[in-house]
Length: 204
Figure: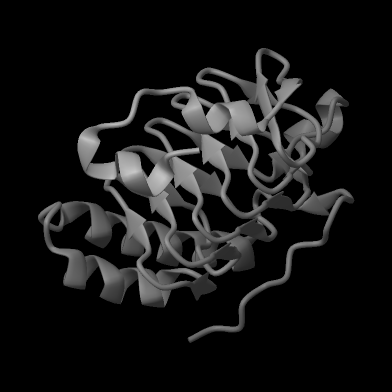
């Protein structure tokens, strides 16, 4: 296997029209294509491809197809990671997810930015900034997380949000652009009624 080209972090680099990067992206896309052709219930086949594709994969990783990324090896997921359909990760640099992360359908995480200057953009220059998602985070459906963002532990991001800057831990955040709306509190443990089968375990 060819050496993995290292993308510079947070500075302009020759991203487009670069044979080394393009070759590795083609490899990543080919593995994604194989993954997406499997029966959705073929969990063992999915695990084998993810083990080749991802940089790090924790226990009980579930990524519901279809799933698309660029390189794959820049993506790290912790234990009990779950994403629903249509997860897209443009992983020019590291995108890391902690343990017990839930991602709803149609979410995008993109490390890529392009220059504002039109000549630089036409020349194929790019910028890549890492994304970090903490433990116990829930990302609502249709959310877009942009380059350079960190999301703190336990935070919930509402559906349809566009996350343009860091979010602290232990908050409910939403909106375009996404902002923290309130803290997660003890009252959230009784937000929903309990079915009798779990009531004793979770009774406050």
